[in-house]
Length: 288
Image 1 (tube, rainbow, N blue to C red):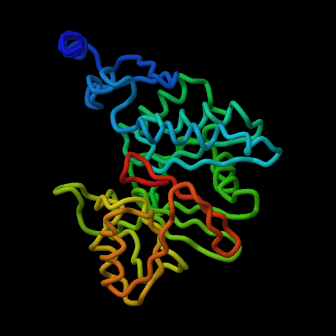
Image 2: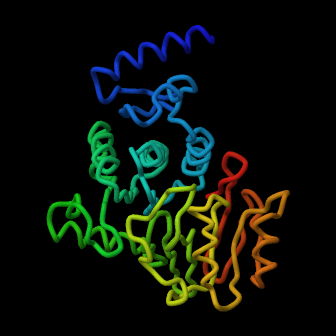
């Protein structure tokens, strides 16, 4: 196996010396292009794009559930779609059980957006996948991927999910989920850097103290999701939603700052006012 991996890596280095992308079919049956700077060697070695294995498995299990076989419209949101692998998994899974579904994908970076579009076109799912590169202040490099104003209005309308709740994209992986009775702020990162150099496309896009919400949900403790500089701006005690973990590090930190934390047990459903929420742990640290 070690020899095979070495030979494969040699082949890929030679291949990418002359080419920018290679068609790849992963172990979930998804077809998409891998690119020179998207770690193709690791993807070929493990049979799926690097870092996505558990997330893809979880998405497939949830969205392929027989509980979804009904007449209601299903909407899925992929914030930070990168090259589109998560979007394609959502689409593949929903096709098994649903007649009415849409996947809405946001990707603001030019290079990633064009790759996302390319992989979307490769799978001929245009009618069910809506991709968008609008940033919060709509001032960056290109206009919306959807060409006409009429189509753009449709995007805004369908994000009102069955007249029950809607999702508003804010920045990076941050969004606000609103039902008729409550608002949940997700993964707020509005200022400061992360991972010793990551920066936001739109730094200081929002002031967390000026946003209205009832809860803050944190998916995991990476600094572009659990942003200490952003949370430090909170002036009052807030209620956080966070996956139940053994080490309790995030819970303890937030409680020491005077906040309340509602732990979300893995795969257990809880009711928050008019919303039913199920947290699913991924890769032992992330959650969705």
